[in-house]
Image (cartoon, rainbow, N blue to C red; front, side, top):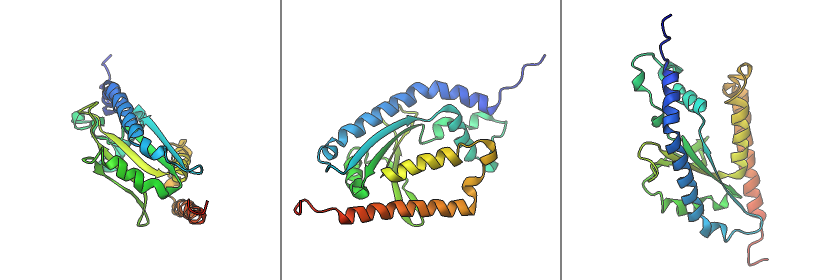
Length: 211
């Protein structure tokens, strides 16, 4: 019986586990550097303010799906399989800096820019407004695997976690909900409402002089 030919996905799974030690090292180093850099901010937070740093290693199947979505027709061609590599992805190793309220975001961005000044910016926009800062680049931990960090409001980050789990990693019968025009409009409205909530909250906070 003839041996089945390995698919592009098979080759990418093998590559993922070859890259995994580097992905973990990049994630660990990136998170450590960010936490250390932001000590100067976290030590001066007011009682109502929050600063949370989280990290994640992109799992194998999620990485393959993302690479597939980037291809023409959202599919892999069988030949030549070597054209595809997970190292082309920017977010195999990722860190999020979550802030409440959003008034601290610019300060955090400036602090991290002093350390990651050569990293490529890729801000996340929604209807012309900035939702999150995003940067990608290489660390000393690996010349192959890029890292990525994002800075955003905690409220936006938590909403995205729910949205992503519900609509981008759904069971098959829910596929396509994220592209429904009504759902896209509701998503925009939620993000706008969260931003308005934070802006109103910050506007009502007494200054230190009034305390």
